[in-house]
Image 1 (tube, rainbow, N blue to C red):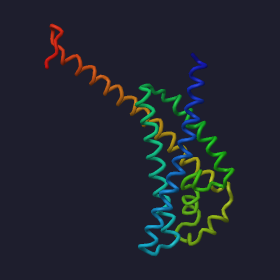
Image 2: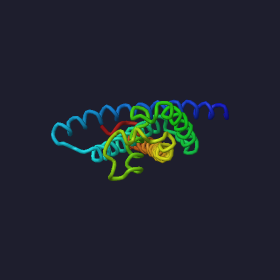
Image 3: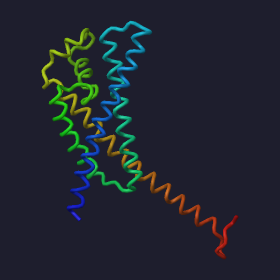
Image 4: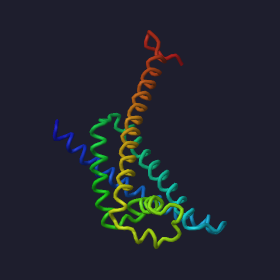
Length: 188
């Protein structure tokens, strides 16, 4: 029984890691497209561009990971809150190592670079070269704050998915039994 739980945590960690990386990559593509459209319509400074990118990555990655976790909970109809959270934490640690390897670029770390730039420089952020000057250690705190939000959202939405599946199952079972009369014939 214990080996099965450890295996489930390991498999879920891998799935969540791939989901985190895919969500960052998809949001990067959406961000590039949206920024090009906005840039064609309106001239924007770098500070505003960083705010736009931060919003896109924050909403996009969190929404994607929440949807993945909800689907996982709905599909499996079981959710261990502790097991899910441990899986998310393990995935986040591996995600951190991967992001550290690639310098917290958007394709693997989402909006971490832009959020850190906004935190470090505030309204004086005027060029991408300013973010490039930051030390990798500057990104760590922002990364782990983002990761903790990912872990909490994924755990909550997996539990919500599980509960919704159980409610749907109960409604289906209740409506199926109410359509059959006492003599075993259908109401139709």
